[in-house]
Length: 434
Image (cartoon, rainbow, N blue to C red; front, top):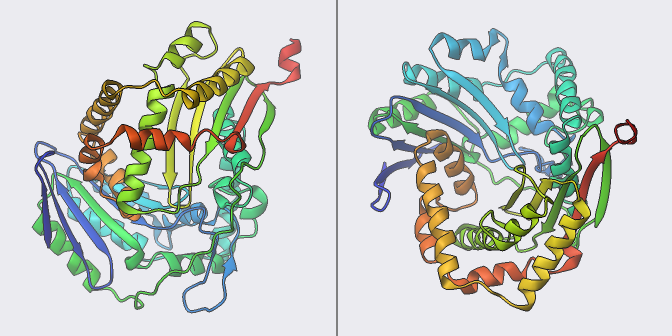
């Protein structure tokens, strides 16, 4: 078992890759009574085209299948897995993102028993056509519910505007039409391809003895048989540099318009430290220009163009990335014009100083260090970083070493108008007339 001590953070991380390829990470946390365990596969909603295990030709599976599969994993022939967790005092959950699917629990007692339940139910799939058909109605209701949420539609509307081909533009849950095409055979095909231990990670954090937990997981995995690890071949369409649609509006039952300004990023075919430094540079650039301490924010807030719903951030994964600036706004057109002008002004004259850079990086370091008090944050972020070949615990030194040149270079990738889009949700005509 490898042991890494991060002196600056006073954290010790234990790691071992098991013979079946499963990566296990354990982070003991002093003073915590709770333990949080995640079991995550490097498989999300964008993985819609791939070569299935044991086959030679690629297939395209129905949209929403990764999320559908996550739902079905909890249902077994002997009953619902949630009941097993609750009987042992654990709170269990799962989520599907664009790039990964994670199963998890937290508990203060019976941690090994609950870990066994987690490992077993994720590694013992059970699908039948009958249960699959039953689930379609449940997920269709979930899709309908999200379709009625203006903030969700705003966020996804901006992504749909940005991307023409990349599957990130497709809702994680799919559509009612696409999920109705899913069969039990589809689920087994995706499961057998992406749920192999070599494509997965266990992360344990909290009140845990690393030796006891590691040995427990090793014994559990040694008692099970798996196919030999194979490289997973995924396929993604070529995506144009420019956005797909520059401006779009949707009418919904809202009292006040909502606007999202999206900026598509093209420097996304990167991994590891290059990705870490670029992502942090972009986040710092966005914070300097559009953060809540920026002159832009003060100006648009005083003019009433934004309210407390305002947000500005950059996010990326391997293959896609974007800046999102948005708010509820009584004057969305004026807000968009202010964003355009701010980008142009900074393009003509970069006004930020080294002291500004230090202020923002110190702020981000402070947020990060506070976040390390959350074992849920650590587990979910560590997994995301690791699948992108980054290390979560490198964030602080990377921020400390960030240069203004890196930040300014990142900002320059925001300036091309062909990569900008606006999506607005406005009150429907009935509300306006009432």
